[in-house]
Image (cartoon, rainbow, N blue to C red):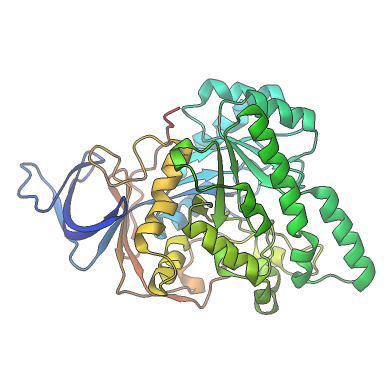
Length: 448
C-alpha cells in the first residue's frame, strides 16, 4: 500500500520562486501545498524538511540504457536506479539498442521491460533508419504514449545513420510527434579524420573535437532547422556543442510557442577540450567536447533561454571499452547519477540560480515534450520530487556508483550538496543512500 507523506517546513523551489511550505503527498500525487498544513485526517509519515530544499524531480530527455542486447554495459533497471539516486525521476531512452528500435513491436518490448524493472518513470523514442519510414509514421497513432522519434542525421551510430533525405523529408513532413535529432555531418567527419590521420599517423583523444568539429555540427543542425521550418515540424536538436549552432535558436518566443527547441548536456557545460589531457577517452563522446570558448557560449545561451533544456546523454560503456587507441575507444559517458549535483555545484559557484536549474531540468523538459502532470510542484500533479541538502556534500567514489559499468568521469569530485530522498509517484524510492523498489515507475503520458 502506498505511503502518504507530509513534508514540513521545506524550501520549495518551483516556478521561479523559493518559499517555505508544507507539502502533502497522497495516493501518489501532490495533494496540498500551503504555508502550514495541520493534521490531514488520514495516516501520513511526517518528514521534517527544515534546512532542506524540495525540487521537482529532474527529467532526462536523453539517455542510453542499453537494453536489450547490450546488457553487459547497462540495463534499464540498473541505470534507472542510478538516475533515482541522483534525483532524476523520469527518463526518455534512445533506440540504439540491439536490435535497434525500428518497429512498433520492438518499441513496446522496451516498455514491457521497463514496467517490470524501472524504478523511475520512463518513455522510449522510436528509431529511424533509411527504410522504415512507414513504421516510424505508425507512431502517430500513439503520440500520447511515446516521447518522440529519433533521427541520427548524418552521424553514424551502428545502422541508425539516416542519410537519405527523401526519408528524412517525409518524416519531417508527416510525423505528428516531436522529432529529436543527433546532428553531425558524416562526410565532414570522414574528411577530417582522413586529413588528421595522414598528418599525424596516429590519433589521440584530443583529436576528437577536430574530427567531429564545429562545421560538422553546424551543417547538420542547419539542415534540420531548414527542414523543420519548411514543414512546420516539431524539432528538438539534442546535445548542442558549438557557438555557431546557437545562431539557429531564439529566445524571442516563450517555450510553449517554439517549434524548434534545443538541448545542452551537463558534460558539455562542465568539461572542455583542455580536459582530454587528464581524462583521455573517458570523456570521448559524440558530439565531441570542444574548446573552452564553446562551453562559455553554451552557458550564456542556457542562461538567456536560447538553449531550452539540460540533459545527460548518459551512455555507459565498460571500462575496457574506453581503453585502447582512438579508433577503438567507444564514445559515451555514464552521467545520469550526477546531473543535478553537478548543476548544484554551479549554483554554489554563482554561475546559475537554483530556480534556473529547476526550470531547465524539470519545468522546461515537461513543457518541451508536453508531459502530462509532471515537472512542477503543483497540486494534483504526480509527486515526483527530490529533497536536497544544500549544506551537505557528496563525494563521487567507485563504491558510490550505481551504474552497471562501474565507473564515472566524475570520480573524485566532491559536490556541495546531497540528495536526501527521491519520490517517484509519491513513493519514496530512495532515501539515506538506500532504495525501496517495492513500487516501479510509470510510463510517461503526453498531452498532445
